[in-house]
Length: 338
Image (cartoon, rainbow, N blue to C red; front, side, top):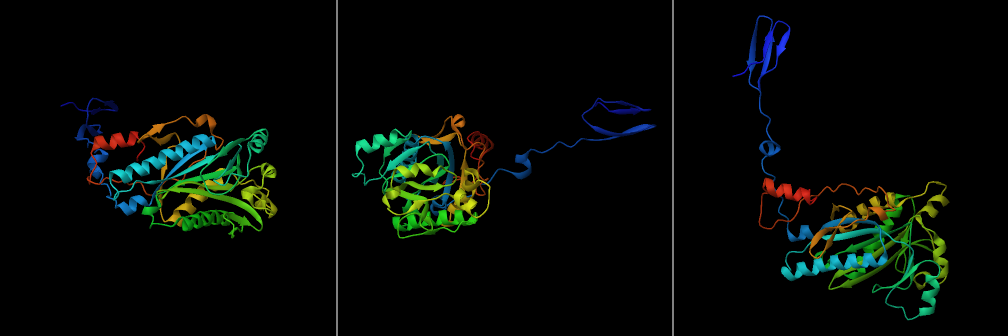
C-alpha cells in the first residue's frame, strides 16, 4: 500500500488515499469512490402514459423561414404519421404537432378559387411573391416576413372528438389570448378569423382529412401590410388588416413586437386552449418516412436565435416497458428525447 506522507513541511503525493499529516507522523483514511448517477438514483423509471395522455402531447417544431411548398410537404409527413399510427393500432394515437414558420412572400388561395384567373395569378407573381393553390378553406390571403404561421397537425378524434367548427373557434381563442398578452383587444366575429375593430389581425384556414388537421393560423405580427393592397383579403369587402405591432404602436408603445416574443406566448395559448403539454423538437429534426430526420435550416432562419420554452412534460409513451436501461438512455439522449 502506498502512502501520502507528511515529512516535516514536505508532502509526498503517492497514493489513491487521502491523508491528514502532522509534523511527527501521518494518519490516513480511504478515499470514498463517487457513485455514478445511475447508482445514486437507480434506473430511470418512465411514466406509462395512457392513449389519452399521449393524444394531449404537442410537439413544437420551429422551422424558422421556409417556403410554402416545403411546409406543405412537412405537414403531409406529419399527417402520414397519424394515419400510420391509426393503421397499426387505433387505440394508441401518436403525438400531435405544431409547426411554427415564417414564409417568404406568397399569396395562397383556398378551395374557392374559381374567381382567380391565371392572368391575376401572374400579376401577383410580378410583385415578387409566389402564388399557391391549396386545399384549405377560405379565399385568397397573403403570407410573408413578419407573420407567424402556426400549423397544428392534430387528430381531432382523440381530442374529445372535437368538431371542426369548435376547433376553428379554439384557434381563434389562441390568437385572442396571444393578443391580450400584449395589451391588444382582439375578438372573433361572424367572419372566420380574429379582428381588432373592423381590421383582421389573424386569418384562419384549415383542412381536415379523416379528422386530421392541416393548415392553421396566420398571425400578423410585424409584417408589411401593403402586400394586402393587391387583393381582397379572404374575400371580405369593406374591412382592412392590421398587425400586432401597428396596434401596439397606436397605443403609444414604440417597440416593435417580434416573432420571438409572440411565438412563446402562442405556444402557451395552445397549451391552455387544447389542454395539452408541449414537447420541444430540435429545429433541425423533422419527421419524414417514419423517423426523425436531420435537415439544415440554419442558413434560412430569419427567426434567428428564437428559443422555444423548455417543455415541462418530457415523458414518452412506452407501452410495454416500465424502466429504461443505461444503454437505451444513452441512445435516447443521442436522439434528443431527453
